[in-house]
Length: 300
Image (cartoon, rainbow, N blue to C red; front, side):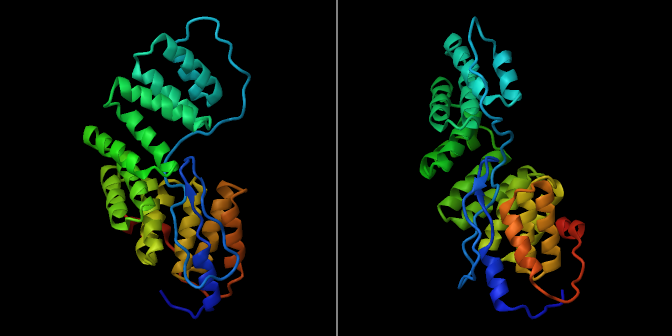
């Protein structure tokens, strides 16, 4: 592309404004936008780094247990995203069927979605006491442990899960864990393995792209982030992160479009608002059009 002279202070501000967050898929924000120029790019952490689905939908009236609870009834509450109700029902179910690891697993998953990490950890641990090879409990317990900064414990569970059933999800979480330990090479390798196992794993593409941004390798990050956006146009963080990669490569008009797309997906997305305001202040000449499809193909 044609290079243009861009004021250094604008580039530094762009580098400092990368948003990030912690899984939630329960993703939620872990770093902040920096409104002032920084002497060097701030460390970039992945945003929306782990795929989770469904959030709590608020408090619901306490469920009265008047008789036996079936797994199907409790699961129906979970599928309806009534997570507090699901917790109550799965608690009752596990009292009825204490040796069924799936009941404890679903109790843990419901509690996690309801925001009760302690209860979730206890339930996953109980499932594993019944079946030490219960892969889903290993994976979801490790996610909680990573969120709590207990990385070594999480790595033990993820290694075991990977031995039992290799999957993109396990590799993606290993990438998260290694990234938390600042082991960038190990994290990158884990994300690559995740993508090899699932070529449509947009979250691992996003995380690997942001890892490259952290290392000032924006040109390598760009196709990965473009592919993540191509696969999941509905994720505002992906648009925001692609916008940051475009800024780092001085494609300011294209970056602005990605920030607008992030706000289309989520009007309240604060990072994209701040990034858009900043990049719209950059006055440059005509840019070569950004071809998302072509760039995303490079990331395959």
